[in-house]
Length: 116
Image 1 (cartoon, rainbow, N blue to C red):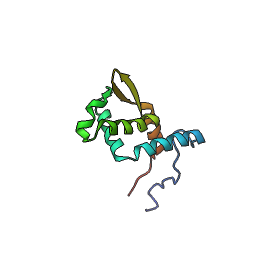
Image 2 (cartoon, rainbow, N blue to C red):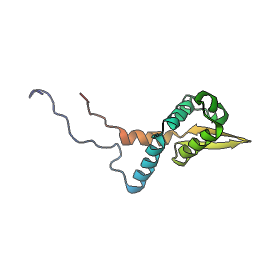
Image 3 (tube, one colour):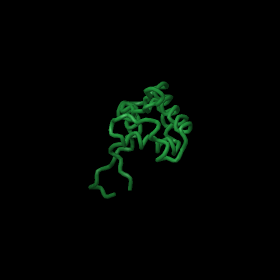
Image 4 (cartoon, rainbow, N blue to C red):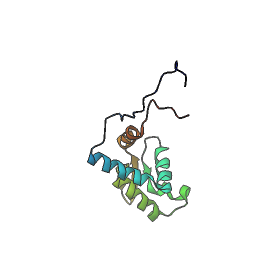
């Protein structure tokens, strides 16, 4: 870097400041739920529904897994607050919780940093 180039700050400030204990625990639970490849695939299918809810019955075939396996993974995503579950008759319908993903974005957002 030459003397005419601006120096970048070494600090990474979160959008809302440091996390408190409860926020850190909730975020860790969400990251833990997201750490499973099948759960990421399930979320991507639900997100692809463009704000519509998704019936559990539509997730088994494209992912090649059984309904009990879908239910197991979806339970983890619901517990982490990433999706909501609505029972309609015998079928569960799932929707993304946009606020949860906004909080995740706030935590991992490192605006202003350039990676060379």
